[in-house]
View: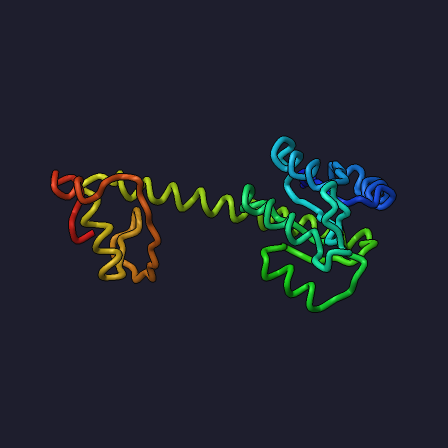
Length: 206
Protein backbone atom coordinates (compact mmCIF):
# COMPACT_ATOMS: atom_id res chain seq x y z
CA UNK A 1 0.00 0.00 0.00
CA UNK A 2 1.43 3.37 -1.06
CA UNK A 3 1.98 5.73 1.86
CA UNK A 4 1.18 9.42 1.72
CA UNK A 5 4.10 11.82 1.43
CA UNK A 6 4.17 13.79 4.65
CA UNK A 7 4.54 17.55 4.36
CA UNK A 8 7.20 18.43 6.94
CA UNK A 9 8.05 21.99 7.94
CA UNK A 10 11.49 22.19 9.58
CA UNK A 11 12.10 25.43 11.52
CA UNK A 12 15.80 25.40 12.34
CA UNK A 13 18.66 27.87 11.83
CA UNK A 14 21.12 25.02 11.15
CA UNK A 15 20.95 25.04 7.36
CA UNK A 16 23.34 22.09 6.99
CA UNK A 17 21.15 19.93 9.22
CA UNK A 18 18.06 20.96 7.27
CA UNK A 19 19.75 19.92 4.03
CA UNK A 20 20.82 16.57 5.51
CA UNK A 21 17.28 15.85 6.71
CA UNK A 22 15.83 16.81 3.31
CA UNK A 23 18.20 14.39 1.56
CA UNK A 24 17.45 11.56 3.99
CA UNK A 25 13.69 12.02 3.73
CA UNK A 26 13.63 12.53 -0.04
CA UNK A 27 10.96 10.43 -1.75
CA UNK A 28 9.18 9.73 1.52
CA UNK A 29 8.48 13.21 2.87
CA UNK A 30 8.24 16.66 1.36
CA UNK A 31 10.44 18.83 3.56
CA UNK A 32 10.43 22.62 3.60
CA UNK A 33 13.01 24.40 5.73
CA UNK A 34 12.68 27.85 7.29
CA UNK A 35 15.35 29.43 9.47
CA UNK A 36 13.56 32.07 11.53
CA UNK A 37 10.50 32.44 13.74
CA UNK A 38 8.69 34.78 11.34
CA UNK A 39 9.31 32.60 8.28
CA UNK A 40 8.27 29.50 10.21
CA UNK A 41 4.99 31.01 11.35
CA UNK A 42 4.26 32.22 7.82
CA UNK A 43 4.88 28.73 6.43
CA UNK A 44 2.56 27.17 9.03
CA UNK A 45 -0.16 29.46 7.77
CA UNK A 46 0.49 29.43 4.04
CA UNK A 47 1.98 26.00 3.34
CA UNK A 48 -0.21 23.87 5.63
CA UNK A 49 2.33 21.26 6.81
CA UNK A 50 1.34 17.91 8.29
CA UNK A 51 4.12 17.95 10.92
CA UNK A 52 6.54 20.58 12.22
CA UNK A 53 10.14 19.93 13.28
CA UNK A 54 11.08 22.77 15.61
CA UNK A 55 14.54 23.71 16.91
CA UNK A 56 14.36 24.19 20.67
CA UNK A 57 17.15 26.81 20.58
CA UNK A 58 16.24 28.82 17.50
CA UNK A 59 18.27 31.95 16.89
CA UNK A 60 15.27 33.92 15.68
CA UNK A 61 15.07 37.32 14.04
CA UNK A 62 14.05 39.13 17.22
CA UNK A 63 17.17 38.34 19.22
CA UNK A 64 15.34 35.92 21.49
CA UNK A 65 17.99 33.22 21.92
CA UNK A 66 19.27 30.63 24.32
CA UNK A 67 21.47 33.32 25.86
CA UNK A 68 18.35 34.89 27.38
CA UNK A 69 18.03 31.83 29.61
CA UNK A 70 14.82 30.57 27.99
CA UNK A 71 14.72 28.18 25.00
CA UNK A 72 13.15 30.20 22.21
CA UNK A 73 11.49 27.10 20.77
CA UNK A 74 9.01 26.91 23.64
CA UNK A 75 7.65 30.36 22.86
CA UNK A 76 7.35 29.49 19.17
CA UNK A 77 5.65 26.21 20.08
CA UNK A 78 2.99 28.20 21.95
CA UNK A 79 2.51 30.52 18.98
CA UNK A 80 2.08 27.62 16.58
CA UNK A 81 -0.41 25.87 18.84
CA UNK A 82 -2.43 29.05 19.31
CA UNK A 83 -3.15 29.18 15.58
CA UNK A 84 -2.88 25.49 14.63
CA UNK A 85 -4.10 23.51 17.61
CA UNK A 86 -4.06 20.10 15.90
CA UNK A 87 -0.71 20.47 14.13
CA UNK A 88 1.84 18.04 15.69
CA UNK A 89 5.18 19.61 16.60
CA UNK A 90 8.35 17.59 17.22
CA UNK A 91 11.08 19.44 19.15
CA UNK A 92 14.72 19.10 18.06
CA UNK A 93 17.74 19.85 20.25
CA UNK A 94 21.35 18.81 20.80
CA UNK A 95 20.71 18.84 24.55
CA UNK A 96 19.75 15.54 26.14
CA UNK A 97 17.62 16.70 29.04
CA UNK A 98 14.88 14.77 30.80
CA UNK A 99 13.60 18.03 32.27
CA UNK A 100 13.29 19.72 28.88
CA UNK A 101 11.71 16.62 27.39
CA UNK A 102 9.04 16.57 30.10
CA UNK A 103 8.41 20.28 29.69
CA UNK A 104 8.03 19.90 25.93
CA UNK A 105 5.42 17.21 26.50
CA UNK A 106 3.55 19.34 29.04
CA UNK A 107 3.47 22.25 26.62
CA UNK A 108 1.96 20.09 23.91
CA UNK A 109 4.92 18.97 21.80
CA UNK A 110 4.26 15.61 20.15
CA UNK A 111 7.82 14.34 20.57
CA UNK A 112 11.36 15.39 21.53
CA UNK A 113 14.34 14.23 19.46
CA UNK A 114 18.05 14.84 19.88
CA UNK A 115 20.15 16.22 17.02
CA UNK A 116 21.17 14.91 14.67
CA UNK A 117 18.13 12.60 14.53
CA UNK A 118 18.90 9.09 13.30
CA UNK A 119 17.33 8.58 9.87
CA UNK A 120 14.87 5.77 10.69
CA UNK A 121 14.06 7.27 14.11
CA UNK A 122 13.10 10.57 12.47
CA UNK A 123 10.97 8.88 9.83
CA UNK A 124 9.15 6.77 12.43
CA UNK A 125 8.46 9.84 14.55
CA UNK A 126 7.12 11.78 11.56
CA UNK A 127 4.89 8.95 10.40
CA UNK A 128 3.53 8.36 13.90
CA UNK A 129 2.80 12.06 14.41
CA UNK A 130 1.11 12.25 11.00
CA UNK A 131 -0.99 9.15 11.65
CA UNK A 132 -2.12 10.31 15.08
CA UNK A 133 -3.07 13.75 13.75
CA UNK A 134 -5.16 12.17 10.98
CA UNK A 135 -6.88 9.86 13.45
CA UNK A 136 -7.77 12.81 15.70
CA UNK A 137 -9.16 14.71 12.74
CA UNK A 138 -11.23 11.70 11.64
CA UNK A 139 -12.52 11.21 15.18
CA UNK A 140 -13.57 14.86 15.40
CA UNK A 141 -15.36 14.60 12.06
CA UNK A 142 -17.08 11.39 13.18
CA UNK A 143 -18.33 13.04 16.36
CA UNK A 144 -19.64 15.98 14.34
CA UNK A 145 -21.46 13.56 12.04
CA UNK A 146 -22.92 11.68 15.02
CA UNK A 147 -24.15 14.95 16.43
CA UNK A 148 -25.85 15.85 13.19
CA UNK A 149 -27.34 12.37 12.90
CA UNK A 150 -28.77 12.40 16.43
CA UNK A 151 -30.33 15.78 15.89
CA UNK A 152 -31.88 14.70 12.58
CA UNK A 153 -33.06 11.20 13.53
CA UNK A 154 -36.59 10.44 12.41
CA UNK A 155 -39.25 10.61 15.14
CA UNK A 156 -40.32 7.03 14.36
CA UNK A 157 -36.81 5.72 15.05
CA UNK A 158 -36.26 7.62 18.28
CA UNK A 159 -38.09 5.02 20.48
CA UNK A 160 -35.89 2.27 19.06
CA UNK A 161 -32.74 4.25 19.85
CA UNK A 162 -34.03 4.96 23.35
CA UNK A 163 -34.67 1.25 23.93
CA UNK A 164 -31.13 0.37 22.90
CA UNK A 165 -29.72 2.97 25.29
CA UNK A 166 -31.94 2.10 28.25
CA UNK A 167 -32.33 -1.67 27.91
CA UNK A 168 -29.06 -2.50 26.21
CA UNK A 169 -30.85 -4.71 23.68
CA UNK A 170 -31.24 -4.42 19.92
CA UNK A 171 -32.73 -6.38 17.04
CA UNK A 172 -30.11 -6.81 14.31
CA UNK A 173 -31.28 -6.44 10.74
CA UNK A 174 -32.58 -9.78 9.47
CA UNK A 175 -32.56 -11.42 12.92
CA UNK A 176 -35.62 -12.87 14.68
CA UNK A 177 -34.50 -12.20 18.25
CA UNK A 178 -32.81 -9.40 20.16
CA UNK A 179 -29.22 -9.45 21.34
CA UNK A 180 -27.54 -7.82 24.32
CA UNK A 181 -25.40 -4.80 23.45
CA UNK A 182 -23.09 -2.58 25.47
CA UNK A 183 -23.67 0.99 24.32
CA UNK A 184 -21.78 4.12 25.30
CA UNK A 185 -23.14 7.02 23.31
CA UNK A 186 -21.36 10.34 22.86
CA UNK A 187 -23.44 12.81 20.89
CA UNK A 188 -23.61 16.46 20.03
CA UNK A 189 -25.78 18.47 17.69
CA UNK A 190 -26.04 21.96 16.30
CA UNK A 191 -29.85 21.81 16.41
CA UNK A 192 -31.92 23.44 19.13
CA UNK A 193 -33.27 20.25 20.73
CA UNK A 194 -35.36 22.11 23.30
CA UNK A 195 -37.20 23.77 20.45
CA UNK A 196 -37.52 20.42 18.64
CA UNK A 197 -39.01 18.86 21.80
CA UNK A 198 -41.50 21.72 22.09
CA UNK A 199 -42.50 21.15 18.48
CA UNK A 200 -42.90 17.41 19.03
CA UNK A 201 -40.08 16.55 16.66
CA UNK A 202 -37.73 15.13 19.29
CA UNK A 203 -38.36 13.01 22.39
CA UNK A 204 -37.68 14.74 25.70
CA UNK A 205 -36.53 11.47 27.31
CA UNK A 206 -33.98 10.95 24.54
